[in-house]
Image 1 (cartoon, rainbow, N blue to C red):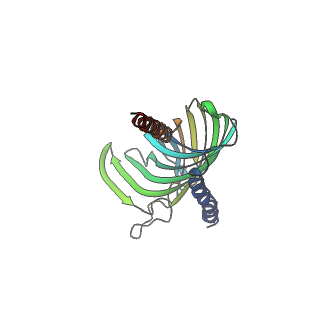
Image 2 (image 1 turned 60 degrees about the vertical axis):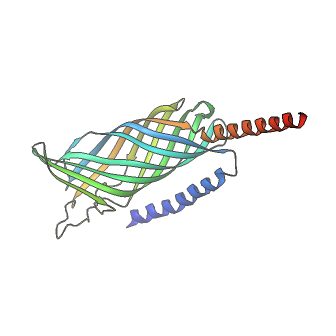
Image 3 (image 1 turned 180 degrees about the horizontal axis):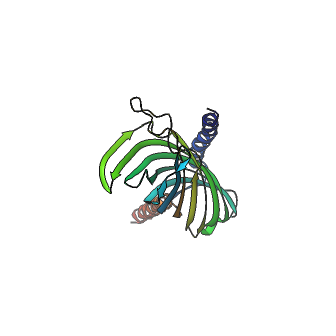
Length: 243
């Protein structure tokens, strides 16, 4: 209960900050958007049941995507806040013949700081993220043969809120990122009938990935096109007045 209160309190402060950034982005030219993502993610976990470690199998994820709003205090330090869609999960062997693959799709709100040469996109960054579990999926294999599969929207197999911390380094917008989920991936209180399948289960997840963060240029191109059109239109009127 104490951990839930801490998570809710963190969310309380994080969400208004995200909304404030959105509102300011249209007013202040110092706020700008960037499109980011983590590609070729490798996920590792420490899975245990009643204190007994189970065999973890590294998991590969193609991509998680994020849209950021940025504000640079100077060319050396800045703030970023964003919205992301994430694939979080694990693979483990219950015994020599049974393997489980479990994952959850989340929507995440994040906030962090960056330090370095921001104009060149070369900097170190740290951020915290609150993930909201949306879709849970699991597969069960026996002797490498899939025998069971389930997919649940807004299920209770995992916690609703899944916080994480991350850090990384970008060189001209491309680099490496590490992310850690300190909370338990499983919800031990989840119940199917009279059975609690995750009772005694514990797992934390660690991810490492290639990462990128590129400043969006769509607005700039649109603005330049509009200015060019106005200039052409003005010139056209001038030519007509002289004829």
